Length: 135
Image 1 (cartoon, rainbow, N blue to C red):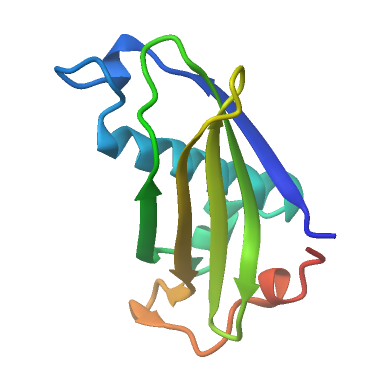
Image 2 (cartoon, rainbow, N blue to C red):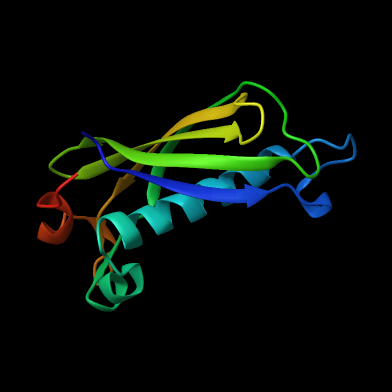
């Protein structure tokens, strides 16, 4: 069974646009929080420590399907899991739903690669701490 991380948040006024719905860029911020929490709590990785040791995991591809708009005061649940773990990349699957209604607001896949901070080049392989993670 694939391990999932659940990130809960609430829509605040500052998260919305002039029409009173969540601004599309806000979803990216929540998705980032979900991935960081997943790597920390599920994989047991300290991304800051990885960076200090010479490896970062930048996003190289995002595919978001906006299904319905979230609005101010909605309570949201973001599920994050690993969809694919390849030799040189990790693909996260993320689904954001309304906690009260179950309505899906977005589905997304996010691809990250390992980059060596000393050369700023993509590493041929993910670090062992990720490649050997039990997911």
